[in-house]
Length: 397
View 1 (cartoon, rainbow, N blue to C red):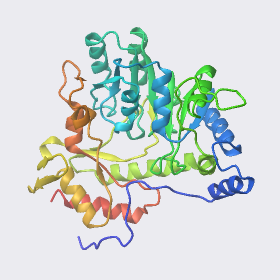
View 2 (cartoon, helix red, strand yellow; view 1 turned 135 degrees about the vertical axis):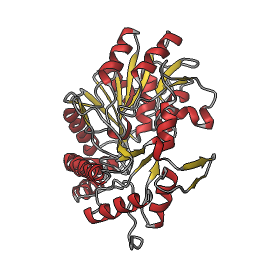
View 3 (cartoon, one colour; view 1 turned 90 degrees about the vertical axis):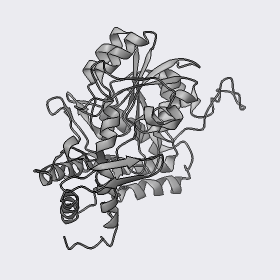
């Protein structure tokens, strides 16, 4: 190919700053509101709730904290079984365990790489007493919300929506992060907009919002001294972090547009290769295209083996695999990653139940075997992306 490694690394996804963030951080500094109260927090809660169409937003220290508050609000107690998306980051699942719940993992479907409604229906047949479902929108692609919500309604279960990766994505014109009883978004450093950290719990329940605010500030009672009558947490977002988020919000749509352009460029560039991009329901949903991913056709896979901490591949002409592509990208100073390793394959959750659709194979394991995340950084140039596409093509020579 004749390419040399990039002088500056091309990343998977990094923060893209614009300047307004510094103005709001400076306001926090000059007003001396540096802790967990202040105008920035009030404004980001107001703006996000209006933008997404929910009544209440509670700004917290992380998306994981938001999920923990959601699980607690859902009433999960020790020993309670909870249905969870299987193909996700473990931050989706860990808060269930914080409250003593027992995650049961629901397999993925190929159409969106999200929770399979057929597998969920089967899970309710096996575990009819489950009352909480944690639904993820993977890589910014909305799941099959209508089907999943209908199943949950029929079985008297509520949805906790993990929209950490999908801020700005819509399903039938409605923003993700508004479909569950309790919903969560993230402002982690790699997300579509960032605060460097931080997250929010979203709800239409005033009572739930008040409880989340109380619990997240160590459950202090309204007394003139420090009075505590229930367990609390140090989960509130700082006014400084909120300043970064406040400066990022006006750029959300521009970030999404750039991410979509990256996705479309990969899709066009890979025409003729035995791969497809991570799919979505083009009729009903509009992703935020947070990460562009691809999956290699089964017949085009060379042999690869993966141990607990390392992988290797065996080169075959005309074929490739995620391990080869990721190692090749790294040689050119480009970051890619495997797709999320399904939770039922993780050692920590190896003994938890896992439910596939009755007529299905283990879809999540198959996507993990053949899929990878492509560099999707907003600051990646068109020329850099063209070279990356050529590098990936060369792996199939």
